[in-house]
Image (cartoon, rainbow, N blue to C red; front, side, top):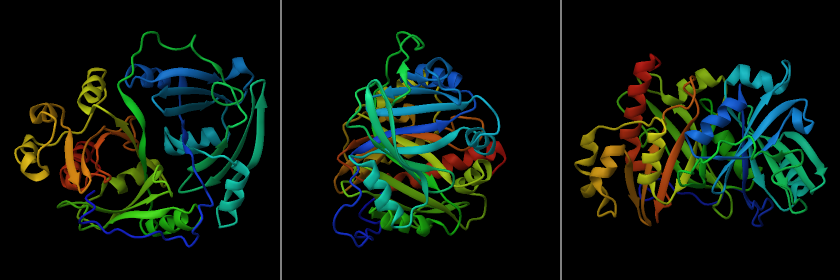
Length: 380
């Protein structure tokens, strides 16, 4: 997204002090139909390490959960053992998807009280969870759809991950090398028509975020589809949540398609950073991860549009990597196809070379690529 042509707004929330200081992304928990098989995919195809496990062998009679790590990224994959639970109902409704965007804080009780008194719907009151390695405090609030934010206070815990998780090195695939993914850059949520501003206000009022950028259907549209988007970030700028809603178009947009198959608002994609996108994408493709493609004509005018870049344009064209520039530098990005049978969750691979934006100059080419996939699926 190009900051020069996008609308930039100051903080919406009225509190000058940061009442919700967030240290970082803690972990992202997916509810999945078969966590054991999904863990194999994330290891082999995406280079994650299986580091911790909670399940029957550790005394957990409710679910199996696998912790996968790469760089600073932590994914938890959880599967229920029995029907009739919220976890199993979540999978039945949504398919595999993100349930919990967990954020690390110094004080989980304060985070809970500050957000709930501002209107957040409580999910978990501050709870002490402990084992032989110490204890954590965990609390949680609801956000869009069935998605929640957990607040994790771990300063008194010395274990691998969370109480109840044991070392999973014996279960890990041996000799799996990472692919260069380093951190979560941002996470995008899709919400229903008319709900974008509601959740913008939620993040401003309830969590003290400010609005970084705003895009309407004139910015994000093709001949057939359109959407609107606003980017919310916390006080430090570490945590960024773009929020999308559909806009009127001739055909069904990618947001409409997501809402139809996810059956509610939810996390559309997770952007993960790398320091060498060509090497990362090349290795991901070699392992079978599928990415969207843009026409080769995109690269004919690339240097004229974005200026001089360090990368070889032929290499970028070979892998379909997109480039955009803003006032602070440029970025390179590429989007995977949906990672499951439902056309819902996907990943973005991003390398920032100074740029603080989100690739507005690539929107048209990207959305046309998505529309070609929708046409193949018969959902456009």
